[in-house]
Length: 34
Image (cartoon, rainbow, N blue to C red; front, side):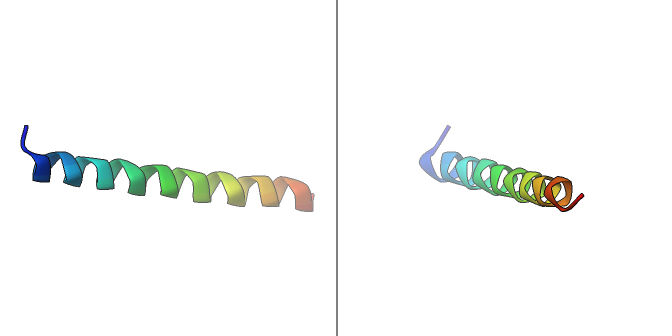
């Protein structure tokens, strides 16, 4: 596996984690508003 491919994979994972974190934050805020 070359460095560029690895970098792209890491970026993809980071984006996915960021997206999950965003959804989780929205969910928590919704629960707090109840």
